[in-house]
Every structure is written in structure tokens, then in C-alpha cells.
Length: 500
Image (cartoon, rainbow, N blue to C red; front, side):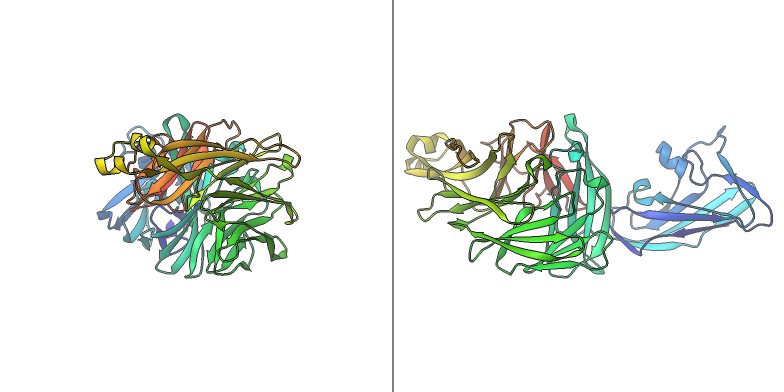
């Protein structure tokens, strides 16, 4: 009997899925009956690993993993047997990273042993490296309005020994009542350029798991790079170095992949469109009024024609808030472009709005903005010292809600709801509607303050440190029973934490 091990590559990132191929070959002249090496209740073969996390070596088997015991008692157990003819082999893979924790970086060596009724086989050792994840950028995707929205793909860029690489993880909201997310898989997908700086995971309006086409994208300088799964080459669309990407990227079931941006110098809206079998296009939209400070994109449901919407807050000449909206059709052409002025509020730099289409045709928008608190209102927002109470005004935080309406329809007045005082500079802000099929009226939001504290919709008047450092750009996953923030565990991987 011979046993051999094979790994798909020589190194893996911390928490990356590791699939180990195990092969047994009957090299005898007669058939042999042996325990099925891939049956959960068999204890042969065993595997021994040595490395930084296991300096004295650690031996395990399928049964040990199943029972969660180091040395499970096999007394009275009858193994599940199979027969191998002379020269016959059996091969399968085991999820090595799920069987044993491999979160300590360094070099490891793994060997397999098979002992059964006088049959003895030992594999050659396989060596591999576990590298720090070293994430430099992240992105989140959602299947908006679909039952599969609880499956959340997260893309990431990391620096490893072989250079910068694109990877992705899949998470699942396992227990909504407890706010528990579970990582299902993590894998490195492909190498990218050293200048890669943003990863663009698309939002969809369908179940992406059954899609025939799937795009992955990132940014290198002024270029959007997109790779269609299975394609030999990367497609590239040049937007220019002064462009600011508007998240998220959008992907349709027909295979169109859209990345929106605005030119920071001219305020011109740009669309980079990728589709199977055709060269990428750069479509130029209108120039927006005001000084643009952020943006958000959304994809209509197929029932609404899968229009693409871009909402971009801006600063008017007098410092007040403008909110621009541009709708694009499936052909990439502009359908509508309009602007709402909200003089009672100011644009908050880095404040990304929430947007969603309502059945009556309105595009509902919510975003965080700055207001001016005067006199008693400023002092009443929180405990202030005497000098602050005597100040004539203070910066306030407000939630602004309004809608862009179809032509010929009277738009309701924007609603500006105070949410406390801004005592420090704002790094970024994000607002989100519930994106699950059973969407309610809840609006989730978070503000990242200078110094790392956050304000949230759950506790708007209380600035606190999050459980883990947040990933930027800020991303909120708003599901039926709770909202989650994407955070970066410095020792391992991206992680979702409950908004609270």
C-alpha cells in the first residue's frame, strides 16, 4: 500500500481554505480490504503536522476531528471497509484548514500514516507555508432583495510572498437572532498588479450562486480591471487618475458588470461597462453641480427594468447640501438626471447614502449630513464644559430622508432628523436600508470619528470603540433582524460584527 499527499500550491494565507488531496494505491498482487480513508467514523489514516502552531507535532484522524477528541477511543468500533483491486487507487480531498487550526504563520510539514492488519504505509512529507493575511483592501457584495442575501461574498487584496493577490471569502448569517456570521470559505483567486488598491465586489438582483457569468474587479491607478470567471485575460477600462469610484459595482444576470465613478476634477459621471465577448466601454454621463463628496450606486429589480441609479451628495456654492441623481438604462444611456437642494443641511465628506427603489416608482434616499446647532440646542446635545456651552453654535449630525420621484409627481419635502452633536472630525459615514426580501423601514447608519470611535443608529448619542477595527470604505450589511459592519481582525481575516 502506498499513500501520498498533494497540495494545490506551496503557500496559503491565514484562514484560507486548504484542500489536501490524499491518494491510496494498492501496490500488492492481490486485492486488499481496508478502512475507507474518507469515512467520518474511521481512524485510518492518521496525519501528523509539525510547525509553529504544533512544535511538538500533532496527530489527528477523520474520527478525531468528527468527535473533537485528540485520541478517540476506538474500542468496539467497526470500521467502514472498502476493497481495492491490485493497482487500484482511491483519491479524495480533505479540508485541512477546517480540520485543524492554522492561524500561526510559518512553515509546516505534514505526513500521513496508514496502519491496518499488517499493512503499513507512510507518505512522503509535504511542506507548505502559512502567511499572514496582510489585507490591504476589502469589498462586500449582496444579492439585494433575494433569499440568498444571507450569503455574503467579501473580496480582499492581500500582500504575500508572491506579491499582491485578489482573494474572496464567503460568509453566511447563521443565527440571525444571535447576530452570528460564519465564514464558509476563503481562497486566493489570482495575482494582481502591485498598484491594485480597491476591490470591487458587485451587488446583484439575483442569486449569483447559480449565475453562468461572474465578474471580479479591482482598481489599479486610474484603471478598472475586471476578470470574467474562466476567461484567459483581464479586461481593462481607463477612467483616469482623478476619478473616485462609486460603490458598489453592479452585476446583472445577463452578465453586464458596471462600475460607476465621478471625475474629481470635472464632476463628470463615468460608467465602466464590462460584458462577456465584447471590449469594455467607458460611457460618459452628465456633469454634476456642486463639489461632489461621496456617492452610492444601486440596481433596480428586474421588474423595474434593472435601471442603474447613482446618487452623489455635493457641496453647493453656499456650503449647503446638494444631492444629485442619475439613472442609467440597461443600454448604458442616461434616462434621468436631477438634483435636490437641502439648504438646512451641509454635506458630510465621505458620507455614503442609502438608496432603494419603492414600488410606486420613487427612489428613496437617506444619508447623514451636518447641521448647525445653536445656543441651547447645541449645549443640550451632550454634557459640555462652560466654554463650549457659551459657544454660539456647534456641529450637529442629522439623518436626511427624501425621494427622487417620477416626472410629473410632486416630491415630498426632505425630512432632517437631528442625531446629536459632532464633537470630532468625521473620517467616514455610511447609511443603509434593509436589503433583505422582508425589508422594513429600519435605517442603519454608522459614523467613524477621528480617533477610531463610532456613532451608530443603535446608540446615536454615544461614541464608542468598535469590537474590532473597521474596514474602509465602511460597509453595512442590513439584514432583516440586524445590521453588521465589516471589520478586520488584525490577526486573521475579515469579520462581521453586529451594529450596536
